[in-house]
Length: 587
Ligand code: TSB
Ligand code: ZN
Image (cartoon, rainbow, N blue to C red):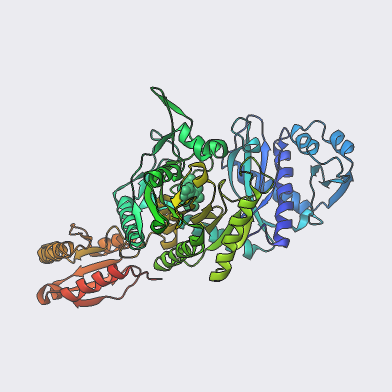
């Protein structure tokens, strides 16, 4: 989908359309006060204080109608420049604009505002010349939004919209939006009963239902085998730790706002862990290590808890209780490059297996000015950042750099993907860390018998099983490859009366071969049962009539295809087993 914010022309008309929206709202609700109305990737929004009024879906068409009226009237959009004093005077009755103006740099001599008819808004611009050109827009949705994103502040009303130059472009965009909604993992997750949420469990705490859990098991087995083959050792550790553990690691100082609050049990102060690194540091420290033992790779499918803002939690994609596909690799300094390369290769390998092509590598660096989030040791950061760049350049991996996205303990290489709805998210991550080994006083004995400090690589290939599954649901639109599909074969006798027994035998045989087969011998019309198998997105639908029964064969259809193929039972079983073993992805 087009990124409106980054398209110069669309950016301007969407910005102007946000003003048009504000003007229409002011006509309909004279008490309205306006906070900010930025352009975003998907169009624009405006945050508005409507007093006690909470918008309903019925309000949007009324506002749209007023916008059309104003646009038709066709007033020019005129820019005025003001000094800070003039601006403060002009908006003296508007606490929101006063807040914005008072935070503007005193040296910023020109503050601008834009007037169209009876409406003036503080704004840098630029804008289109007249509201007349704003013809093809649509208000998409509304929501509540705390002023400045802080739950302690007043809840404002946010209205989202989008504007294009032509009707065709708008319609095309709206259709894409509908399609994206269809792909949304929250919708498919509900339809296919993959996961659920319940207010009694809490926000951001999904429950994996049997079909979803089955997929997760397959993912766990898949990555476990890969990691085992690469020399990882897996552990189980508790999902709580004491406050002291997280003080030692530095999380308490640098990561506290992402953590659940402390709880006291007897004399101990516990936190639900947001990360597993401290536990793995202690596992490493449990015994002495020689330089010959390194790298040591400690893996865990580990449950973590993080505070995510309630407005930010989203299905399985952004949760408060998550399971990381985590590992910490303890290496000698001379092994950093090689080990980092192995992780990047594993990421590439896994993405290939899943047929994931649309992703970007992001080198996440610290923000040099943010001394609160990032520990203060310039040399260590320079070293770590350069090391990652070096390896990436050597491997010829394309990436872009992003300041202020590093972990507090070091720079990282992240893989970014785009969900069906909403902004990009990180899946895989690989992070370089010189800090935690020091804080935990980890050592190994080098070839001269001297104690040295190892370096740690934090890595999560799937990121979390939660987020990866969310992504996979959207990638496949719920039609999982056969090896992952909760039901791999749906067996349907044309008539349960005549072929029911044969169908039962075939189903049993498939199950004995380890294939997830289900029998649908309900007394329903064949067409109905076939359609249902399609809706469930089962990869193979086996249809058994008299021919199949007499010849001991099976006929099957692949999901989404009309063609039917007939095979000997053994042939069919071998074909399936081969496909499952190879983890074939059909695209
Ligand atoms: C890789 N200590 C490291 C670990 O060793 C770590 O925790 N890194 S992380 O903070 O980047 O988290 C790992 C991955 O978890 C991220 O790359 C992302 O894919 C996933 N993740 C982070 N927050 C959430 C969330 N709220 N919901 C679902 N997945 C998340
Ligand atoms: Zn870690």
